Amino acid sequence: MQTKYICTHEHCSYPGSTRFEMSFKPESIMDDNNVATAFCPFCKKELMPAPALTMDCDPRTLADCSPMD
Image (cartoon, rainbow, N blue to C red; front, side, top):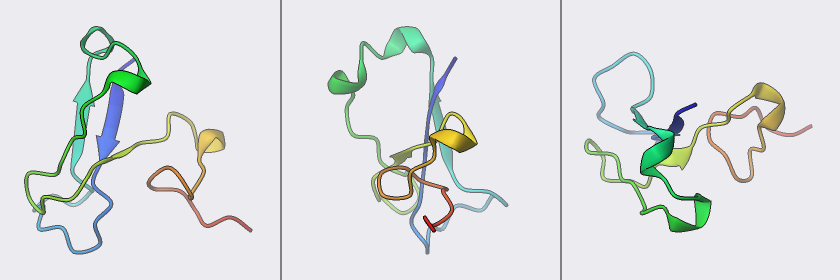
């Protein structure tokens, strides 16, 4: 399963219809503590981890999550 990071910057200049997404193969990441900070090539803001599942979503720490009720 690939590890995905997405741009959450509100005013990103990415021309696509969705957010900019960067994926990494599992063998390219040793563990969560040894990951370099990835930046969006369009707006230069830090990319956030994309939630693996909807139930894993925590808007305080992950991108693309609905606000907590």
